[in-house]
Image (cartoon, rainbow, N blue to C red; front, side, top):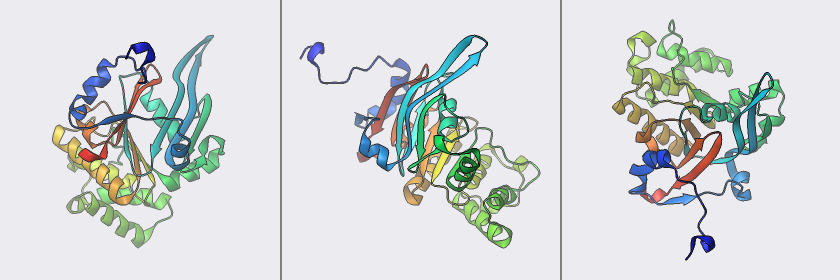
Length: 274
């Protein structure tokens, strides 16, 4: 069959993406997704349509994101990958409701957050989204348990109930013995697990993470990602991660590759390997 009449979608050569995906493609079947699939949009935990982000600098306009259509299904672990400056963190911030796009729509859990007021959006984030930051963002003067209790207090869970849930969350991430330690007494992997426990406080339905393994060694990074995957599959939450780390591709359900502000590849990793 000639290229002119081929039924396969035309995909530009993606050398960097292929490098990221090499390990996974040896053992997994990859299927191109359809981001405009109506059924997917109805059931998605996260959905964007035509999202564009531009910044104005004097008379010059810089387009950071260009017409982004993306869906993340409930219970999935999805990665956003791409080179530095490709727009990954900007897209994550828009999907989390931390930035407002220049144009386009974002729906989380069936609700269009781009139409919400600032107050409505803050309340929605508090109730439904957990955040994991690259730099942990733990309070140095508080213990591991107290860092989690602060997040619970903000969600209306206080006193003995907050102390109990903080302990349960630390047990869930394997850090119950470290509950009374301060961040300075914890390893990088332990601090990230505390950050995960904090992100899971109040049972959020969506967890968003910005480079959660960037500051971790190989073993700690793998432990963190497997923990997030287990929590997604057993707890039913949806996980969206920005990452440069090709080692964690095999733990994802789907990988989206961004370059120059556009989605270049959107591939699903088949379940028969997982």
